Length: 506
Image 1 (tube, rainbow, N blue to C red):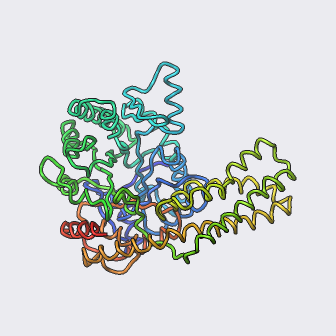
Image 2: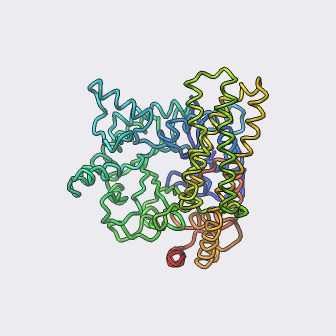
Image 3: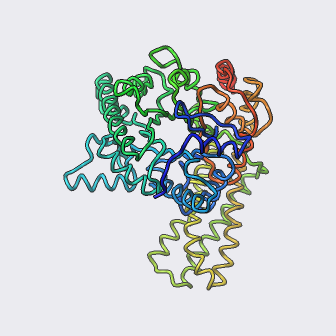
């Protein structure tokens, strides 16, 4: 395992070496982090451009990585471990220069399977929140120990810099769903958090983690919301354990359209969560800076590619061409190569993209919805089949020719569908851009919408680092361009208020 952990001197030297990259101290830990971190929610081992992006980020000025045991079912942590090992072994990066954050709490995928196996053996994880089919949650020390062992192994690290309880509010949501009275549920909620903190202090003493914290989507919520997580209450829990506790970091959502962390006065002392972290010297990581929920829709706070709008009959024609190409694969080409019948059926199901588009292309609702379906479902299906067929294509000219032409038909159909939704999305981006410019002079400066979204957050007092999903090298470049622009962390309360008022009109 890679020894060591992030240090004050090495993180400071790293950022000096890559200056003028904007950076902040992480609360009172004295560690220095770039103002944008590499968010690993949708990255995985075995995806070349994910590895390339992480290499680039760590090589050019980003020194905070945020991952979780449940991201890509553990494969996100594995990617981080592999990239760190390569860079450290080559001498291009010191372990002490990079801050690694991971999270724990979810039981999905292999963890869910492990949970079911333990139940059958009569030894379920204690205090398990059985949230739904395929999803459970747990904060009990027995589960945390199991998960820390696995995370350190995947990350190939002897010590994790920060270990966060991941969305513990699942307990409160489960309690409400099951008709539990709110106040007793909240008492139990914070008892579970305290028990987890006590265990995490033991891990700090053993040297397997340095600091701990909580990542919660409900930190910025209204105080009367049933699943609200109160940071002041949690801080008091940590203080009651030991004044020298290691609770040092929180993570929460904040973006142009969800300003609760800046505006919601939800702490018992009457302040916002950003005001509270400043008072107590806590570090704060912001997630979802570019993915906003606004008026019951997911809005991507980034530029929309320019597409020439195509007539609907042209869209239909290109989808039909795609379906015809798919049909030729399973009727003509697959029977001519040595693919078992059962596998042929599976390939047919995975490659029936034209049929999927035929039934749904007019009802996707928005460009962002189309982008999610394309990148999260359709493209992985296509790539999986193409990867499988590639060795056969090296030996069969018809298949090789089909693979080339089919990729072109996929691109044509995808662009045609995108053109139907891109115009409205581009207009929305323009309206958001104008509202941002009207809210704050610094935010109005040049840059892409994603850069302005990052600038609004990093210019807000209390924010340590914003986690951006930099899955591609060009995303990394976009972030680094913004981090090289100077901006002051001055009072932005009025700016957030103006922005909220401006966005309400669009």
